[in-house]
Length: 256
Image 1 (cartoon, helix red, strand yellow):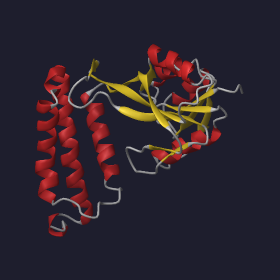
Image 2 (tube, rainbow, N blue to C red):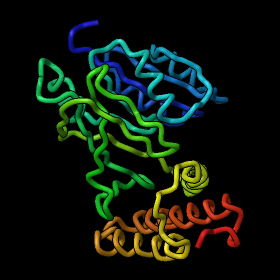
Image 3 (tube, rainbow, N blue to C red):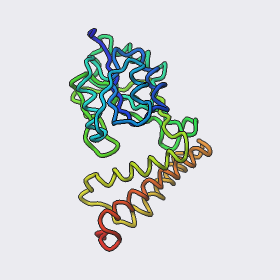
Image 4 (cartoon, helix red, strand yellow):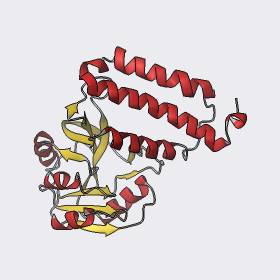
């Protein structure tokens, strides 16, 4: 591959609905690596139709599967993208400019524009939403957190001005389904040494989140979509706390 080549890495699981747009937006990259977790829909077929290198691998965790994809990448740079994210034209141009001989950084944070019901959530703490996504091969790997894994960079970092479009929750049913999945994964995380009392986590934390982000950070300016999003996000905190309690054996073993 050329000196400043880019490998895009995506992990998938039944991503047929959103994957085509994601792949079309990556046509400027030198290769696309797709690590699929045994999808039962057309995900693999779609990926191969876009000339992606597809590896079907049992799901071992978000970080592990992403790191497997990184290990298969041959480019000088790796661009990590989720299947429900799309590279904007602005970001595309910036990416191509930055890697052409730039020694400014070994990795770049890219902000996401999160969409809910087709509306960009500009307020409520949802923007800017920076994540480390572009990095030199060999300079970064994802941690192994059960959920919300992050990339650990070895080297200098900088920020890009362009953005990813993140549009993952087209329906309430899908959002609730994801909440159920991710809150379950939250219980697999190692608990903090000094975890807050149960009633704080189940009552005050969700309420404080909603008040802070919906009112003080002006999430109400995002209309009905913003309201539903922040109610669901507060519910995420509530359900996580209850599932952790349930895992411990119920209220009688909450450790209060």
